[in-house]
Image (cartoon, rainbow, N blue to C red):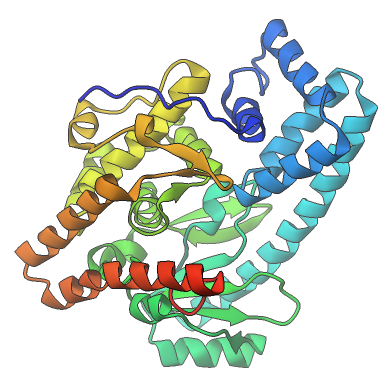
Length: 371
């Protein structure tokens, strides 16, 4: 299956973010010509545009990486004003992250003390950036988790949407921590249909050390499965961090594609994972000139590529009809073939949930309580 490069983006700020993060020149191995172009782009930014750029970078969970690049480029160009803006924004964001990591470490330590399996999912994939909330997965009993969070952190449970109930996830609010702690318990997926990934996730976790603190995180394969569930089967959009993060683990040779295909096939989402990878590869190719070093079987399994992705409302959008709908149908058929009837029933509720969320959005301006 031959994929085309992603189409040009109409938003200049997203294009600039992509160039700063993906063009070979935003880092140390910079040609003088590329450096001059990037420095010129930064020098022409006014304060209002800079604030908008930082806001867009924050929404896409790349703000630290972008600010560090802007800071380095500005200093090299002796552009003190932009360097000052970047440094001030960077200090504020890193202070937020430092506080969040302290709480995250404390929560993980308490789970370990109670002998509960736990893994930090999604949130640390973007390092040195951090997501807007702290996501954990555990197979511990929900009552035990409630007691732990209340006793050790005086946490309050936030309101739950219909989707939260199906997915078996709860938001906890801890005094002193601005971010919510979202804990998935025993299931993954928008409707909690994914028990195959959840069942083996704890046994496949690995440890990473960030700022001197150790955290349990999923294997690279499981990390990509979770990213695919989030992007291709739930939100139907990519953040720029998804592109950059996946390209980084690919460049480092960290992806075991055979293991990934086996795990994704068992979960019934291999076509979605392959499509996710090809979209990332096509987008990277647009800016670097070459995509990811994907195996041929990934291209063959992908349903579509980066040519189908478009920019709207701060993110890279994946078309729902017919592309994503076909992936959903394939996942449902796979569950039915494996006679996972309860999980199939859960997944079959997704179109109703999505429709209710869309209606709620149009009537009230919000899908809260539903999605």
